[in-house]
Image 1: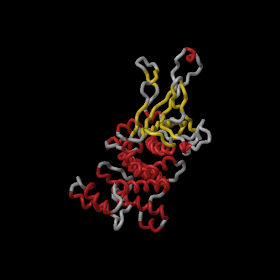
Image 2 (image 1 turned 60 degrees about the vertical axis):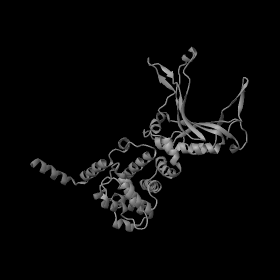
Image 3 (image 1 turned 90 degrees about the vertical axis):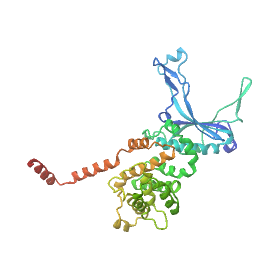
Length: 394
């Protein structure tokens, strides 16, 4: 529904610009409509916008609109002086387009913002501009804003009052610095299913550890198939030309066996995970209390078990319990997020590792502490007393 347009089909109306007012993006955007002067006075900011992406058809801009500071004495006499500001995404096409074209671009940029904020973003207001909607001001005609009050844009917004994750993951300046918007739009078609699987985990309020595990492993498998190797022949070539290119020859046989283990006619999840775990030897991923060489196999067999519930797998292989998955999902998310950051243009491995460690901590160390704690508390009282006596005797 569009205000002041009547019953005209929304897809018959064309726009050249639509602005999406977002809720709670100020810290992510790191841009304010205000600034503090040299004498600590509050001022209206001169620049409160940034171009995110542009091509031959459209451009995307992030800007902050803010309420005016008091300009007359009477405004200063109010009991409460309220200042408000909000982040906005502006999508502009070079030629007028129907609303569905804007929806397509908005959903793409929305997913990237949600990925970087680790939560679903909420729309507060949508406003469009069209050459067919003008008003006469003085002697000149000007395009007049059209408020869009009901459309698919609002279909997946959060309900009021839902508490959102507040963790600062990736902020807008980082995305701009790493040319992430360019990378993202260039790769969007092949990256989309991986991002969607990842966002499902973030958006779900009551997802079980098993369901989250299946999502993460599917995301990793899809990522590898689309960005690393889809077929076994391609994978063999990748091992030779990329993975082992700068590796000492003495390691080639052992590394190849690790990567190809489980492969016969098809490229398996186990081999895909082994490749992602090695990460071309650019970064080291912890694997908790699972031996590093066994990690891909344990994860692959666990995925097969929870997919098919074949009890025979449990008799032959280690299968992680739903309780264990709570922690190992974090190990897998650490790996997945590393590759997402790489695809978004982040190239400084040390900075990526620091960002991931700040988010997840040292998972292997935590698992070791947790395991020792369980061992201590599971001991019988008399065993603890006996140890105490032995210590006192020494």
